[in-house]
Length: 579
Ligand SMILES: Nc1ncnc2c1ncn2[C@@H]1O[C@H](COP(=O)(O)OP(=O)(O)OP(=O)(O)O)[C@@H](O)[C@H]1O
Image (cartoon, rainbow, N blue to C red; front, side, top):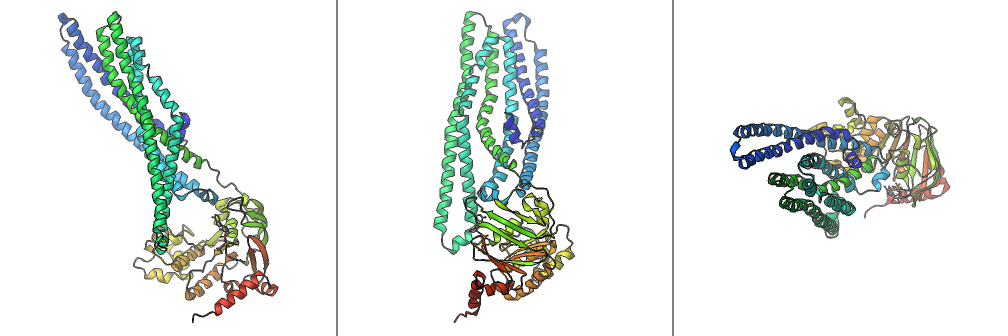
């Protein structure tokens, strides 16, 4: 049980205490009317059993007043419980979500590669919502509902232990049935969560790929995948409800059979003369009230089991190892690859035995056919992934020992697929330097040739950008990304096809901005158009993840190797005209 509460509270069981205490108070408050009912019953019963003493109306009035006070007390305790449990639930979920989102940022990208995108989204939204519901509803209900039967058992055992035993004798069997079905419930919950994640992933894929689906008229096929995912989710839901429901009902009936057993035992004892009628009637009265909260507990068991799996999934990610490393790299030193082998999937290397050196404050271009591993090289320098064999060092310090945050602070990056956040254009540029002034942002935008188009927008820098930058053209997004990099002004610059989406006019201007950005910096750039990298200090040519050749443009052209071939091909393409 403790691991369960540890998991649902995200490792902070103490945060559940106020809600648990409030539930306890609520449980006790609920016992009071039952006790008062017993008193009323006994007062009325005595007036019949001993008619000479008459009905004690003063006592009845007192009990009525106490009942009225109880009404107010129960309102206060319930309001307290409500406030405590909801506050605990929403606080836990909100801080937990933030903690997890922060933790995700520190994991290697390999972690995300192994999971469906819908899976991570569901983890943060639906799994937390499940846990939230358990903390706000099920746990307080459980604590408060257990109070009445426990106190009733203790009180009634004093009156007649045989009757009390008869009333609760079936309870362990009901609990046993639930316990026996535990692994089945766990399996069904797991497959339901998996189906739910798959459906979310397919839906996300369908919505993000809607442009491609329309362009290729592939709606039918993609829609079929979505339909199948929803179909699987439906079947998993039916299995979960259809199998777990009857089992819980079975446990419920078994537990409730205690009432019947008690009536049988009571009748037997009454006939035998060892039980008084008043005690028997008392047991009947209390018995009907006791099984009500137990029903609530058993009914919420399935939900709690389900949320246990959600909590486990959250804990699994929370305990996922962050990228280790505390060393501070010397960013002004050389970047050295030493026999580096790496594959996104370990059995399928995309870089093999790769060795080269990039001197500080030089421009190095990475060239090679598509899929030869150029982008992978830049991702490994930024430590988005850790290499499997060999080492990458920056200023003599192995990157796998470097503090990932510090390492990233030393790098400005411009990728071919620019992502803009759903925020203003100004704030999207500010990501490069969070404390930048408006003047600094505008200066960076000017140098990246995007100030003009931003100023022409009705809201200028305050213009909101659609998710992923959907409201801007590819070239505009790329220039904003360059402005970010200019603003960051880090000593190492990684440019992956930074000018690929620009028109010739802007390309020349941005190229000038890049020339400024890279002054006295270590630059690694990828460009398919070899013309743009002719003046690089060094060109590294990759072929199928291996080093094919390296040197300056003129050296490589003279060598008549892969680079010379690519160069000739591009010269020819440049000479083509549409007739
Ligand atoms: N996230 C990823 N997960 C799995 N495989 C990947 C991933 N990214 C790239 N790859 C694979 O790694 C290989 C090298 O890819 P990379 O993007 O480094 O090549 P590239 O030379 O930059 O290609 P391009 O010029 O087309 O951008 C390719 O076979 C690619 O399919």
